Image 1 (cartoon, rainbow, N blue to C red):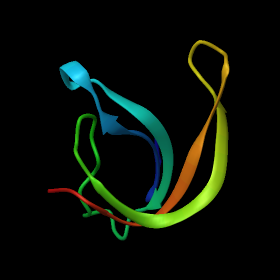
Image 2 (image 1 turned 90 degrees about the vertical axis):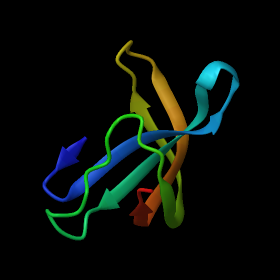
Image 3 (image 1 turned 60 degrees about the vertical axis):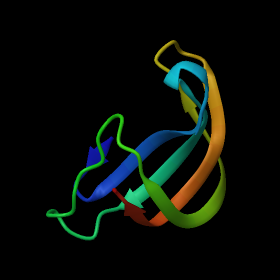
Image 4 (image 1 turned 135 degrees about the vertical axis):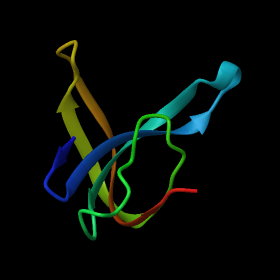
Length: 78
């Protein structure tokens, strides 16, 4: 989700069998400028930031999901 320069991402960090990913984290990030590359689905990224506890949100199916939350200082795209 993007709102101005603020970005909220759900990112899976562990690659499993059949190219399926798991171990979701929530990342909050403020882009440095509007010209900074957008992060798109299926991008592989490197994140540098600070752990910010747990984030609970409602999934599209209506259940509550709790995952680790990171406030990113930098996100690199290869």
